[in-house]
Length: 281
Length: 138
Image (tube, rainbow over all chains, first blue to last red; front, side, top):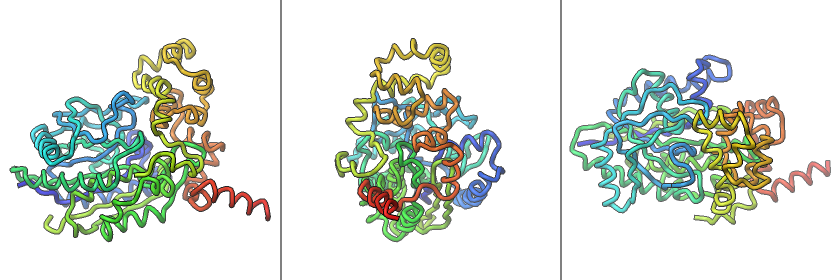
């Protein structure tokens, strides 16, 4: 039987991808960030993931404004890195797992989560930067990745509560899958940042810290925080953090924090990384 | 869930909601077209002619031609779409952000390295105005 062993929260700044791809990880500006993630990779590797469900958002890449799915899941065998305006990132093609992904969408839809099913989709930095940070610069990603894309660009995004409930439904779907798989769920994006408007550059480290703390001390209360609080306190683009609630909802109530890293800045953004482990992992 | 009107007291922030989505639809579609290399080349070779295909408003067209990033946001541009024009024109997110904040890239970068723009005094227009008044008193 498949089981969820851990959850990962991870930011996804495009400049991090560019720094990796252009060999700048040891520059003074970037070194502290990449040093923090070196430990993240060890912690994740020790959890031996067989497959990742990565909750992320598209940044006007695979989806234009023509279609704006709130929640969608990629069921393809592979997902190519997209050209976001500066050429595709030189990272491996993301391999999916159609059988597992179809099991997930069937289970989710039958259990009242009306997922959009995606057979073809390119993936942008929102998906590939967390993979680079958590798995390093590799020739092939070490395991298949199921993309779960959430609209957090056009208002309204789904609520934190709804995201948490989706995590709960994913947990049930995983438990019902009859192959032995160790599943890790990534919630990506954030932390505090605002990259548009006169208020851009906003960072709120205190808010970010309480967010990381409450993922273990008060996850249900945290998921009830309204959108407006994110926009006001964590910057307009800080709303991406609602995606972390899908990850948290997929874990057991008593999941424990095993690693945390926080760094300001990467370009315009506060970067957070947390690894939460289920008790029976 | 709060409706988007409730966000109006947050300063320097333009929620990409039903109003902005409709207002910026053609502008953002133009930016989206720059995902393709052949379109980037065609645009850079003759910007006015390329823009003719997208039925932009005069204000949108002017903002694009002038690379006026905050102007594009005011006219319904969404930063993730607008950033494709940034990438096409050699502007990083950081460079666009500095421009939107009305400062130089060096000053913006220095602000970010020292921890970013503080939340204190920037939560609401009311708070910002109170801060400005206090400064004026000193």
